[in-house]
Length: 564
Image (cartoon, rainbow, N blue to C red; front, side, top):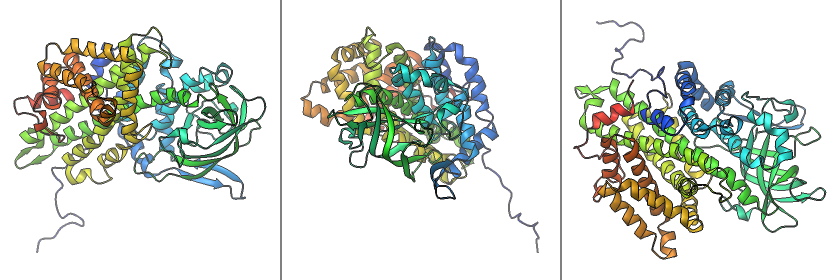
């Protein structure tokens, strides 16, 4: 009888080696060319360095560790004192240190120069391919800075700590720390996205008004990153029917924990490395920022930045899933040849590559618009086209790109087969992360209605944008026709436009992506994208990836997407 050594029943073959030790930046043609085009070539060396550092085996392991060992809440000390302490795995703090070191929490504000917003968004995109949960507190910190800058007295006490590139995890008063993180608390049980139904009240401690001290009583149903050093929250004052915005620190002026009690941490589908919570305000100390009764417009400026980061985060999930899928097919054989050499698999991968590149060029163009348009809360002398990209295309992109990430990560997981469905690889985590960006900072319907509202409030900007697209599309009959159908839709009665808001937002993004690809991608890429997303008869492709016409060079599209 044949005997076998203990545990050796077969030889392990045809399994794919882990994807590691490659450069996230240099292997991404769409990103690297956009960096130069959009004025941030000066940041190239930093991105090359970071792109290599983020794919070492030790760094890749941080993402798995931070999501396996999720944060824990300890409401009381062993002696029964209320402490509301959070404990994270060391991997979480290492991830935040990496993000902070690259200035992704403040770069355009701390180091302003031409292309700084583009540089920051490119770096954020690289880190978002590693791990998603750690992005949340840094995104909110970044988005809070332009809001806090309008409060000079308060900002003077925060500037150095907000701009610091050192992560300080200590749970102590901010005066004792090297750096600060800022969170956000808007939604309540009864309202969700309808923040105007909020019931939390703020009572003035003295004269009140802007810069005045208040005590807050109420709750927040979603309170993002409760370990942050302060949060911006919405509440009602006794003297105004509309909501106001408040800066609520984790520690009160007397050095004691502020009366913001964490009730529990959310048990989330994904984004598990990050702590999200429910809290109650029990006479919590807060300072009004912005004008009284103008809380929603005040905090919406913060949301505009976080919406852009949602687009980037979803585009990064697409990119991460795509390179994993391509790597897998280059090392896995089935039915007599490598997967990547099989025509139908090439079709799937090429279609995914088109979607990923279109998302990348879109968010980089939005980054340039954010930089060019400056303060989005005021209609300045900014180019109407740049304002339109920021104010109209951003919510549309937040709707469409975040939606596409769900389908995209599912398709990429399927390329891996059963190995993609288990938690020992990254695909399951990518898939679980994908839905949050569609929900956070406004669900799909909220975004699409915001698109309509923006076009109605700034018709000149909308018309300028559409005219620019028409000029870009003049040489492409399919894109011209799509633009004509889109503008006809906008002439429908108001109720019909609202009913069609998702279709309108979708068309805005697809036309924008097509116009950008015509300008900045090889003809093969632009033509394939337009033929399957916008041209007459593109319904034959449907919403399933892998339905590109066979006439396109699928292998060339894949090679452009990821060449190592």
